[in-house]
View 1: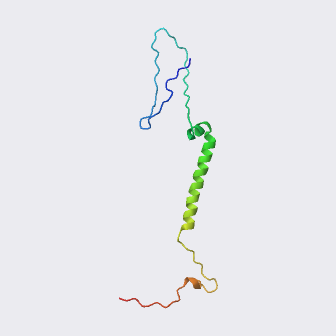
View 2: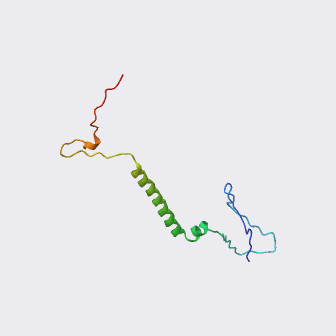
View 3: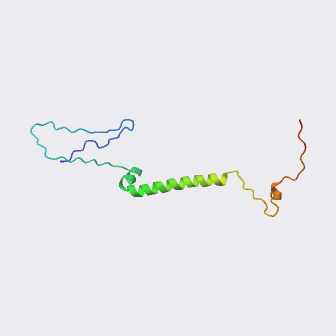
Length: 108
């Protein structure tokens, strides 16, 4: 016997359904076994995630890792820090990093 209870059921995310009750309101019916099945009709991304969970997990983890790697790489390349190497022969800064122009004294 097939009984459809709800064809277009939408669950409220603030108070989700946690249990369901069945009652037979006849004294003359004897039940020996019952099998309860829920058939959800998903569409779009929910359909793919429900029917292909392993592929969905792999794609989701890969995209998440790629996004985080892009953020880290862009942050690294956009940083304003510069690495200054000393000249090995003289142990001084390269000439383009030093200010050779005379400075005026500070006024008080």
